[in-house]
Length: 163
Image 1: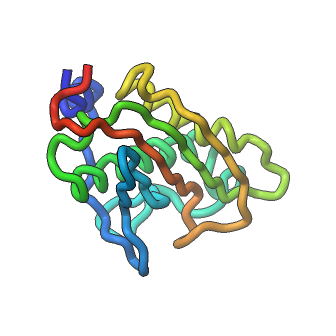
Image 2 (image 1 turned 135 degrees about the vertical axis):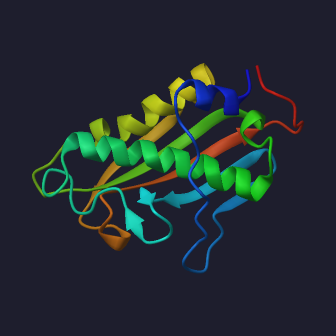
Image 3 (image 1 turned 90 degrees about the horizontal axis):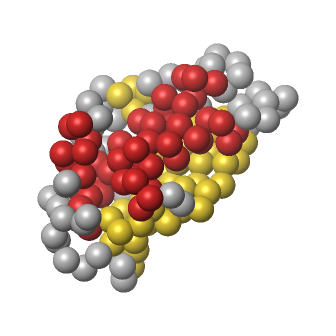
């Protein structure tokens, strides 16, 4: 089954790929790996976010998890935009997820927030979605986002559908 079909089956669609606002590339491919720059939970174009503020402050744990899931969809979107149609079917393994959670000083549930992304990756890719991970708490993130996530994917060289 193609990843596009799997996304449809899950009732998901990819958002429009957001262009970097500063001097960096959204995706860099090196050999069989694609490095995806930190993705924010954007909605409605380049400037709107799903939620604003710190988790355990203005943003609930569940809202933080929703933001993490949206970061995954943005990562997949920029992969397609950068590497072309069929890029998602070339993903052999989600290698690493590095999640940053803007949180109040006494919040320690960063892994629970980033689990929103991890769980979605496994829903989409099955065992190929299991990955190494870091979930880090920070005092603030760009645009007052509650979550930012960067990804590393291992790609096949062919454009065929991965099984």
